[in-house]
Image (tube, helix red, strand yellow):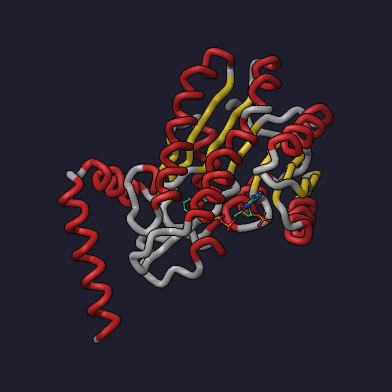
Length: 261
Ligand SMILES: NC(=O)c1ccc[n+]([C@@H]2O[C@H](COP(=O)([O-])OP(=O)(O)OC[C@H]3O[C@@H](n4cnc5c(N)ncnc54)[C@H](OP(=O)(O)O)[C@@H]3O)[C@@H](O)[C@H]2O)c1
């Protein structure tokens, strides 16, 4: 997109990557819309954005609530025409012990990670089309590239977001709207703080926000980082099923014996 986006809406703006993105974009003359379910944490981020000179508006809205989210976005956009929307809110379900994830968790995750993204993006499309400008950013993950055995619904949700975003990009380019999908590796946020396994190439949310901003400035289709880890994940996704499962089983055994040592 040309120049800096002045008005930015971020779902999941109360924590982790969304919080850091809000601070990254907060600058005098800018307006940041922050959405999430926890009013207290949203307000803390809003205060930090205001300290950087931006106007900040919070919306206590669950991204699963299609009608409420559309209403909030419509009201906000009428007052502050939105330049950039980041559909970032997400949850992770991870079962490292080899168990299948509970059905309710899997259904719940899909509602946030997939339908929550649609609920965020869809209301903005006609508005941006009318203005013939705007940018949509969808936060997926490197998990979009490969089926993680610990996280079936998470991997599936991120693959859905990746393809949804790229399909939209092709359609919306002629209407002057940019669409980018963000596929990041490990970012040190509350989402992954319980993971005890190694987190190769993990980075801070501030660094991730910088990378995302740079990728969006360049209107990249897929903003993936760290590059080596993202490419390894892509390669992993292309391996024959048997080979991939052999590697996973091997690394699980290695981890188990390290724990027992
Ligand atoms: N951290 C990583 O390693 C990593 C890697 C790749 C991709 N990602 C993706 O990056 C995105 C942000 O994750 P994060 O790491 O920053 O995690 P985080 O710190 O746990 O933040 C998640 C955010 O999503 C919001 N959220 C969750 N469910 C919601 C709902 N139903 N309605 C509205 N907001 C909701 C949370 O706010 P409330 O709790 O206030 O609702 C919170 O602000 C996610 O899509 C995640 O999948 C993360």
